[in-house]
Image 1 (cartoon, helix red, strand yellow):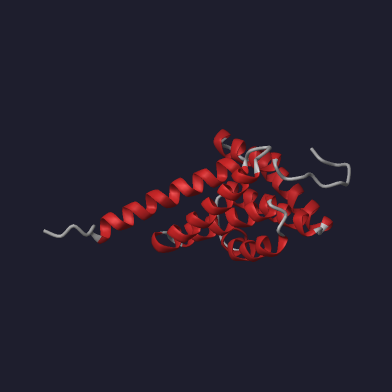
Image 2: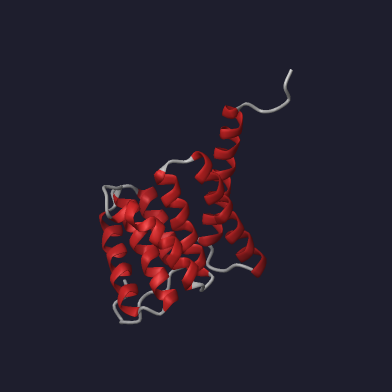
Length: 162
């Protein structure tokens, strides 16, 4: 009798760890304050989610994981890696059909990355688009998720923050 797990068992384990890492990273990303240790935990959890989703996920999982990494790096004020991961995620959400909440979140994260990079025009444009899309979301859970994300993104400094 083999003690090695089956391919199905391994894939199920990878999916479980990917989801747990993803959820941990988003929970920390939505916090209005974090300790340096929590920042590190957030970053490592986001990378773990990407690592495991690359093994067992589809294109949507990969795009969501890259988007999470873009957001996390923007939270850490590291615009270069934030842009790298944003470029991996944006085509999936903005250049093909995707759910309204996914499009809204894509704009929110793009605005956050632009803010971290000091691009005020892109920051304001994407932030405003996310706010407009938020108002049109039908489901309370989708709105709550986007509100939690926008809460940690600095609003544009043009005096028109909602």
